[in-house]
Image (cartoon, rainbow, N blue to C red):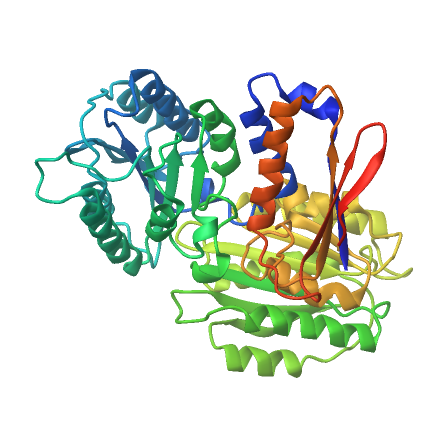
Length: 510
């Protein structure tokens, strides 16, 4: 059972109330539902079309905030050349205009956004999605080699006025039809609803968004919160989680420690972990996900070369021996990079990942020319070389060895280290870890309440400094959190709520 306590203290609330209680609640959502770094979408071969609502209901002031949001998103993208990230921007009101065609020149994009006019009039959402897809096609975004993404940002339901042949309901249906067409091409659609319009419903936004819809649509009531939102999603291709790494062109090399300190029983659990990871990957062809597996002890061996055949991979894992021996971590990292290079993973058209799983510090015994400290240094050198090629490195420490430090794991791992390194003390927890990270390219995804038994106690401040109005908003936050939890039975997620002021009261037991 995972135990999680969420503290909503008056001190935290007073600090966060600089702008509004709305921003506070959004920040709380970020704290309790952290965004997995997963694939850094901003560094991938990704094409993004921002489809931005310019209708009359937004108003010039809020449209300026929308443009500031686009500026911030563009500023957070590390553009390089045509093989890296590219961005296009279109605006829609009664008609649709492509203001910035697909490009990777940041200065040009920023200037283009600055020149975007506020047009007012209707909300032609279906045509916006259709034209966004057309721009991806014109720019040769091929989902086999690039991530193709549409981000729709709108404040209301589709509406072209009373004289138009299609009413809002029919325009919604047409929007969903066009969205389905684009998603059928493997384009990711993120749908962002702005403002408080009751006509713009969650059902519509989630219908437009890619699956799982909860990861690809969001509602932001206050335009001032767009700044927080931009920082939240700048490195992802989704709105609440990272990219589903399993469906992208990703090559993963699992580098598994086979040293004597692990033991045969625990090595069997390591093999079961990799088997669980592979079982969850939807292999398709050589253009989709591929996996290779190497083992390391005193020496390093590639046991399963890069392939996309699940049956073959599982058979290969089953045949992996446990030779024991020492821990040649630097050579494991070096050979993992060599296997990625041999398989043609260059970090531009494909995502290249090394997952190092080890139970201790590098050590080749007392007779080796390099001691453990020197081997650590060599490991970091090889890791730096691979990361310099654009390879993501995830470092997983298993067991309780004090020689394997978080500092070493964090330095081997890609940045941010908190997203790409993990420590799992108990080998029996590897299966949970497999479920947690199986759909990401990182290690720090939030606990998936759908599949893990999690008990949450919300500890809610009821003190006088909050005030009745803000406390009502805190209760709304709790209702929203609870409505998003997929309760099933006592074996699944459970929740309790207590309030505290001078005294503490348990209002809802588990």
